[in-house]
Length: 114
Image (cartoon, rainbow, N blue to C red):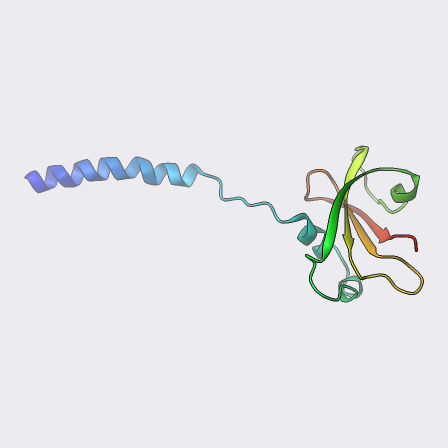
């Protein structure tokens, strides 16, 4: 009888802990470099000599120059520019992917000027 009470007491202490664990969000945000990389075509991905992590992320103002590369802008005056290093060619600069401030939505891409 005592063992049964101990078991029930332990169960009542453990259940709230287990229930609370399921309420904790395990959603981890994908790194912005990987969001940008996954939006690239196979040909564009082939330009990256090493890893998508070999890139720089910078918050930039939307201006006439970079706005022409954006196919969707949600009206923000700033966006993230993910520049993939060492992707330039003889005719163009490095590949840049523009990501919305939500860090999940790709809104454009293009090459920097040489």
